[in-house]
Length: 119
Length: 119
Image 1 (tube, one colour):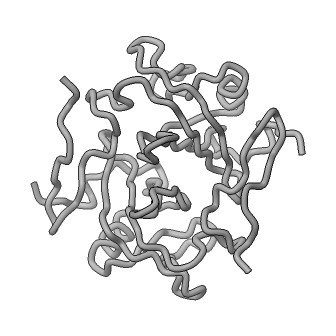
Image 2 (cartoon, rainbow over the protein chains, first blue to last red):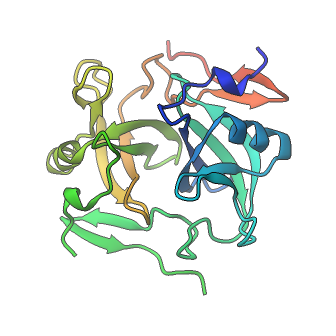
């Protein structure tokens, strides 16, 4: 079946969440948002492109930082309202300069930082 | 630092997305939503508890299906607006009886089903 980005289920703001996962290690790197056009751009260019809610503009991941996400494969979930991007991540995915945004664990009721910024 | 669920950043509906990942294989199983109370219940009980947007009620994963998610570790992202639950998943996570909800890939512009329901 041909894939049509407009067949996805977007929220009231026209967005859905996209999880970025390292295609080799399986590490979950980040979650950001896409609209239909960002989905189309991601597939066309092979570079993961989100919609920045704070800047209200397209966000080609790594365009300014160089921390590009090359798309390996895009998947959708059973409800068609969430995406999983398998990516090849250049450098850190997180704006704090860590590989993953999920560097804080909750252990015994305390927040514990699991990794330091990449030097 | 002690963790307080109310310190997370919820959307206008009081929800944030939570990614469930198999703690051994790294497979991303599903994404669902939590409010502050669901986060607290998940941590207290060790059973992953979402907020069902369609039913507008707590959803203790596996309560009716038996496909329980035992919490191994809960992590939060740099913006505190998304969670990653490392889980031990009993059976399929997806309501279609597949291990993961992300069983559809987009390859060469076509939707391709990657896995069959568990028999």
